[in-house]
Length: 465
Image (cartoon, rainbow, N blue to C red; front, top):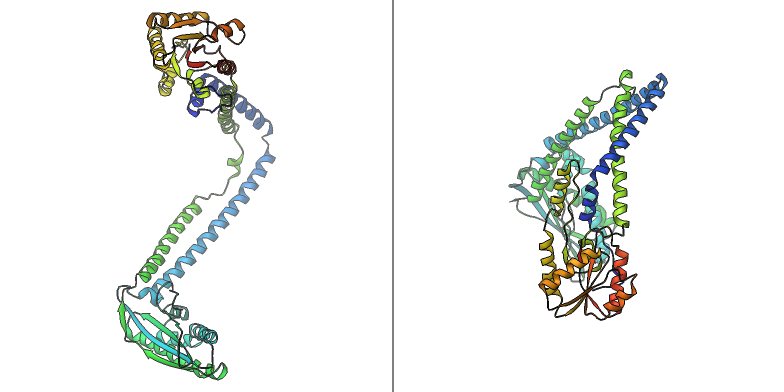
């Protein structure tokens, strides 16, 4: 049904093939662009090719070479340092020597009680304990005794809150308040992991000894409180988090080695520029610009073809009429294309687009009458009009009289400029539009639909010739 506020939508497939059908124009424009750009560059390079330009070009290329070489050398140096450091870590760090499927765990619970402190004050006290145990100077002594580095020793121990799980799940500390006899009580849970229980027990003992030393100092300075240390039996467990960490560290080494290999290849590919190779050869330069001109010419031609497709008002196909106005297609006559050189390319494009179907005019006329019979919905008086030639309109009318004699059909061309046609058309129940490619205009079809709508008529469908 006609509506005067339809929206025109661009069918990208139709737009693409409308451009491809103009391949001769595109090719011609591309060749012209190639000749213009290539010829222009040839003249320019020939005129301006001097020794001064060669010297300046060499200096620029040499500076660029020095900068790239320095950047690659720095990258290689940093990668080697990172790989060496990670290899040392894998070899020396006790955390990397632990079997995640047989991890030794030594643990202890420390109960802290205070009558004078509030819960908030005791929380601050426990935070101070935790900080001192994790960063104290005693760790350096313990690390030296066990043959570790201090930073590696810290990875075997940690002190965290109950609701906090460390990345490696080595050690956890829980603090849970309760009130007994007006006392504030906190529970600290400490874990130490390792490869054997002698080492873990030795480290845990050192931590607890430091805790007792801190307790003597803190209860004098920060207030009276008690600690009760309860050691747990040594246990074994499967630590999947540690397994993931170890795999990640080893994977990082592999990644760094791959980056180092790529950087070494880049370093080998860097070649110091030679003066003789820096002068731009006119032939090579012309070829490059000819290629650019070829694509630029084709692109510009394609742009204007697309612009013509979008702005063109003449009817190109029945599909466009259907998409614009929502009319039913009663039939479309086949127009045989003119024979051209390299016509097989046009035939191939039409087969890709699905426009290679060919029906004789008699079959199209039978299809038109069949569709009219199906779409007319019992209407007996039909009027045929449009901007196609009178010959086409008469052929359609004759076929309807032949196949559908029960219908009353009359014709009249160009209702826009012919008032008599409008007057006759008002007495009919339905209207059939017959339009012709490259003759009818979309703007005039819109006016036809508006006139039919104004007199209360109905457009049965459209025929395109």
